[in-house]
Length: 107
Image 1 (cartoon, rainbow, N blue to C red):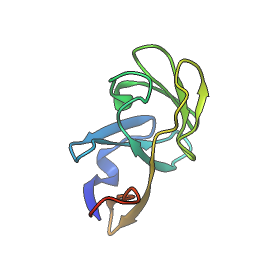
Image 2 (image 1 turned 90 degrees about the vertical axis):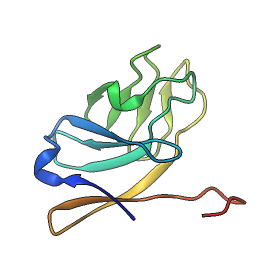
Image 3 (image 1 turned 180 degrees about the vertical axis):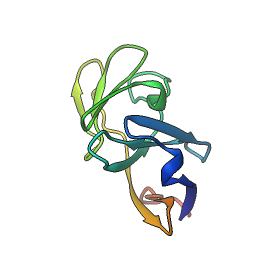
Image 4 (image 1 turned 45 degrees about the vertical axis):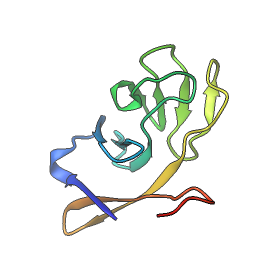
């Protein structure tokens, strides 16, 4: 479990990048939902936390690939592979990300 920031410090419609390995992007949607995905676009090396957030979709700032924050699935080309999603919780006003570890790798 990785503490990110206080909920009040991440306004709705914004994202923050946490420098883990790999980097994670945490999004706070306009609807008040929190999502975390791997920050790097699967099409090309670009930070998704710097992309455009619309509903539950984030658009990559480099080539406009779009990803569903709920599933990590790409919703349009040029991305073809999904990004990993991670569970997000809020405890005592602090946002936490629970990293998903890939099968076969040590935690």
